[in-house]
Image 1: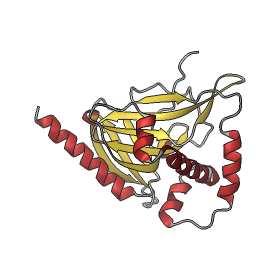
Image 2: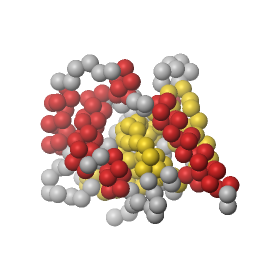
Image 3: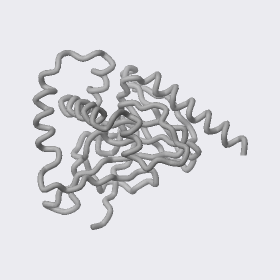
Image 4: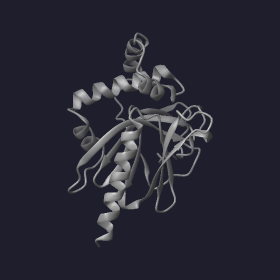
Length: 224
């Protein structure tokens, strides 16, 4: 089976809310997928149905969390993803162990921070977790996304972005001019690839952590 082409990260104002499309744009070296092993049953169907019932019973949310949920085309789906991620964290023993399980750990690598957010793509925002280590910036979708590589052939995969800090050029704040409460973090790699993250529950902390990681990497590079 040929490796599918991933939706390309792009500015939030250009993103659509269409069905997740695996063949709309060329790959970048920072994008990857992690297939979900087939189990003979639909991996997300039963879980999502159960979690959806729980999500619909949720009471009013705090403002930052509400803004986070509003980014998603479906507020229920976003709430389901947050519940699913919380359950996964409990099962795996916290962010550090989940990071190590999701990404191949590098020698001497240490997880510094993690933030829930969305990655803006050509197929719409992808909800997930942004990890900041002393060596990399990494993002993984909170739950598997469905795509079809041929009519009738359904697959599930996790959508990932991995950028080593020495390949990251800038981290800049941005906002929707018409709605300043919609804040983004714009990252550009040294070879010109762009990534837009949005819908942070802790936007200011995430921006500060990213800039600190980038500055530390630049200081380290200057020593060599």
